[in-house]
Image 1 (cartoon, one colour):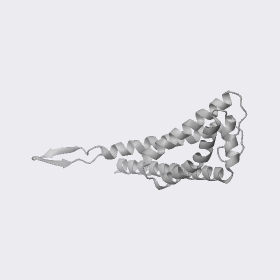
Image 2 (cartoon, one colour; image 1 turned 90 degrees about the vertical axis):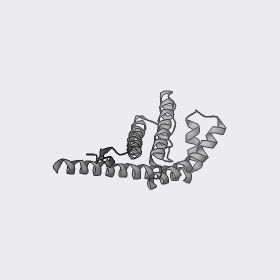
Image 3 (cartoon, one colour; image 1 turned 180 degrees about the vertical axis):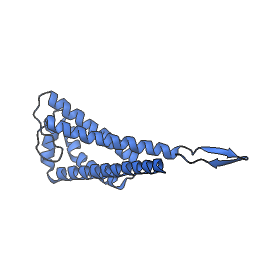
Image 4 (cartoon, helix red, strand yellow; image 1 turned 135 degrees about the vertical axis):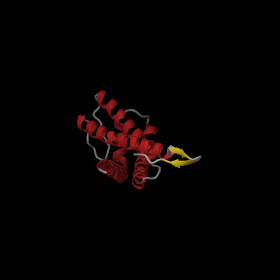
Length: 169
């Protein structure tokens, strides 16, 4: 009985961590998108400061990304299609990290633009965004593992010609 209860608590603990990660990332994305929507020209200048996109690309990213972040945050909050939304969140954060890293490595003093502020890209912002990326990657990995487990057929044993489901321990 002791082994079963410790496994149950462990599963419960992982579910709580998943819930915290999902709601935390969702809130973070909603806040980041909302902050950028409040001052779109400051965010547009931040995107332009990276010096990675042509002017038309800067406008598309500056106008579309905040809305994408708000929608993605809401989807994470609801947990709808979690493996896909968490994976997309991870890819988006990875792209942000790569762009920030390139800009920082080139010695360009650009504003991060992460939360609508003019905070400069620095080792601190890179570390913070790396931590957020790690949380998103862990959430995506767990969501895909759970999805795969649900898709696996339950093991069964044959008893007098009939298949009987076998409980996993």
